[in-house]
Amino acid sequence: MRDLKKALPVLMAASVMMAALSACGGSEAETEAEAAVTEAAAEAGEAEASDEASEKAVDSIAILLPGYITDQSWNQGAYEGLLTLEEQGYEIAYTEDVQSADMESTFRTYCEDGYDFIIGHGVQYGDACVRVAEDYPDRYFFITGNPPAGDEELPGNIAFYDYKEYEGAYVCGYLAALMSESGVIGYIGGGDNTTQCSDKNAYVEGALAADPDIDVRTVITGTFNDSSIGKETALAMIEQGVDVILQTCDETGLGAFEACNEQGVYCIGYTSDQASFVDEGLCLTSLLVSVPTMITSQIDIIDAGEFGGLENPGLAEGVIGIAPYSSAVPEDVIEQVEAVKQSLIDGSLVLTPDYTN
Image 1: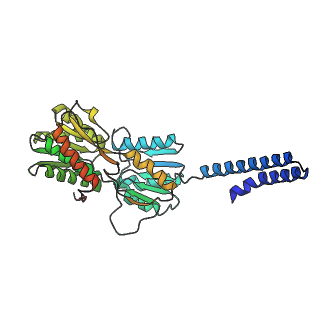
Image 2 (image 1 turned 180 degrees about the vertical axis):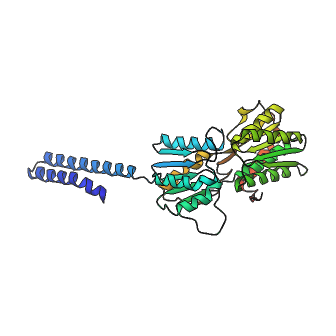
Image 3 (image 1 turned 120 degrees about the horizontal axis):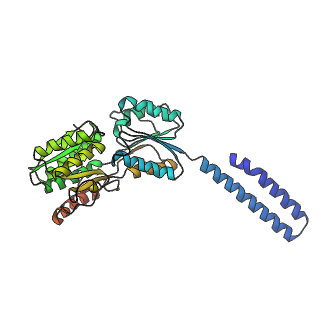
């Protein structure tokens, strides 16, 4: 209705012109009048389209990060997704290293500052986000993780992306067991949350599927942001005979990679292809998580009016992936691992996520 009011003066003027020219009785006058009406209608359409563009559901986007945008992993991937949206004309903001005590207040600050779409980048932000979302029904909220435990109904303006990262961890465990010469492999996680626990347990499950006698050592460090702890943990594992390590702990994991590189031990990367972080051949592959896709895809869902609820993408949807294998991985091992990956993609192998510590 507002667009029609804007266009009405133009259309009325064109109609008056058409009537006046038609009164002259000439076909040339009628043609000129018709052209005037057509031009007026086009101007009205352009005004309406302009208004629709300015009234899109989301103009500004903010994200809470558990670590730093320089970690070359989980947080950097989110930041790159945010930059993609900035290039499309959205206003963006981010806060790094948002820990438990500051989660709710940071969400609320972004709401008060007028941000339309606010993201908590990790399952740990779920509880705080649910509390805030109820107070700001005109905002959109997104958590890159599964919903908080419990039976209570969740606000309709919040979406969760319970991606099947554990499928990739299972494949990595299978590969690690086949590549281990010592029969002892390791996993280093960052946080005690459902995503990390399911990764750890799936890695163990995949390794045992490849070799029932494999010994898997696991450590949850409690931090994603301390490379020195990652290095110390990896070195301790290597002393115990571990010869393949998967890390899913961002900046902490970079320290684990440093230890593997110094000791000539195989490693498996996380989020992005991290083969370049160590000497050639040492990084067997990486568990890929398409973080930019997670974030940018939500804008289309909001625009389509289908936002909210829970999504569960994994290997089949391309949100989770496996990076190219290193030159150290024999062809027969690649064939076995690829067969396992394909069974997860086609559904002939279905995993049940294990969220226990």
